Amino acid sequence: MSSLVAYEDSDSEEDDHDQTVEEISALRTGSFQHNKDVKMCNSLEITPCPHIFTPDPDRSVLEYHENALERGSFSLHPRQSWDREYGSDGTAPEKHFRDTVAPLSLPVTPKIISAMQTLPNMPQSFSDGLNSKRHHTVQPGVRPYIPKRQRLAPSVEITDPKHPGGQASGNQTRESQILSEVSARVKPYLAHKAGAAGIPRRLLMSLGGHQGPVNTVQWCPVPHLSHLLLSASMDKTFKVWDGAESGQCLRVYTCHSGAVRDACWTPCGRRLLTGSFDNKALITDVETGQQVVKLDNQFKVMCAVLHPSNPEVFLCGGYSSMVKAWDSRSCKVEKVYKAGIQQTLDILFLRGGVDFITSSDCVSRDSADRTLIAWDYETTAKLSNQIYQERFTCPSLALHPLEESFVAQTNGDYMAAFSCQQPFRMNKRRRYEGHKVEGYAVQCEFSLDGSILASGSSTGSAHFYDYHNARMLHTLRAHSQPCLCVSQHPVLPATAATCDWAGEIKVWQ
View 1 (tube, rainbow, N blue to C red):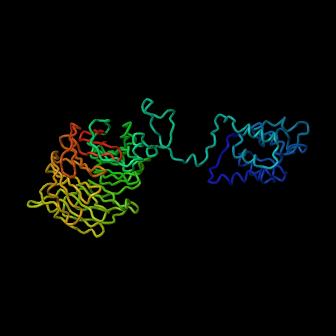
View 2 (view 1 turned 120 degrees about the vertical axis):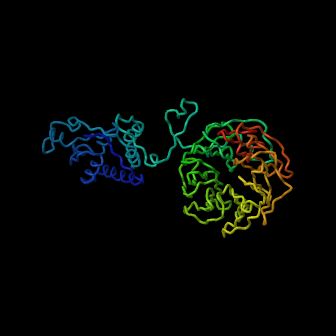
View 3 (view 1 turned 90 degrees about the horizontal axis):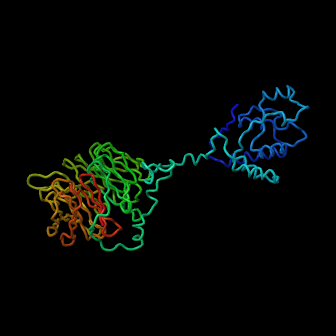
């Protein structure tokens, strides 16, 4: 006969509580029917007996249960022992019931104790017995009851750097806190208005862990989460780091089966958009690492960018003559932009998301009439393909945060400035020179106030220019391998992150 109690999952614990109260109330009044005796015995996996609860007519039903609950068990007897001790008529005049019956101990559940205490006119001895059983020791071999809501609650195992192997102490699990903590270094700057951007001069920390070239690094755009640094690598992974204090890798995402070419944060800071050479574009949850959206572009993705006014929509370009606009809610292609090109190198939405610019590797013999193309987002029509006339490809684009202008990184070892208004004319008086590109996908980026334009270099240096007069302000000897990206921090002054072709990431201040 098993002595384990089988608990059933229930979405409503209040219904079970009310039912238990009604049954115990019936015991107090003596109106507990035989069918309820059978139901209660079946729930405890005990063979029912008609006289099991009232063997002695001189003693009340409640008294038996008071004594049983004070001992922490119900004194019940199986049918086979009943016939052997009391005979077929169920009487035993020469022996008392409790002296002859070997009790079958069953643990008193918290649900029964709670129901008992809600009954009116509860004797003091009975209430004291219930309270003493709240902290009883669970018998060996019996699993304690865990509520269904607690069993189904998600938990993520974390690593503890203080223990060998990085395992959590005691194998404990808890929810990840990547997005719930504010860096102590960033917190003092949140209450103040951002001042003029500065230029980093010294190395703050070096982050190693990628096994291939790191294509891009990007700080989280949400101010109180701006200590988080995103990196995407050719080793098929993208990672989130604590780039402000510890330099620890907070999570590694291995969702792609190919090199991760581009990655960016969503405006809320809770999800990541990535494009890969496995033809997939993914939206991944930062905390859980789960894939929220997985889309097949049917071509290698070189660039992926969110719509500025509708983050549910994003564009993907790559090894194809088309650029696709996806809706992450329906997982369907909303628009297709067709151009006679071989591949798209970068996509840049202009202010408001009405128009966008694409950069391609297509250069004709006489003119670069398809190097930069302006598109109307709604109609998918070309607005202009005569923007950049020099015969150099443009691996990256950057939008000025305040003015109606953008810059294009060119393989001519300079950056060119353009107007955001039609006909998107190039400003020939602003030419940012001094760095090398040499065929690498070197990116450029503005500071938050738009005063400083930063660029990587194939020589491994990071270059900082004054945007208004195109004068070079500082050259940072950052890496020994080509520096592919320089990302300036949106909150911390004079702070930037760089990455290189060898897989190294550095934070400068």
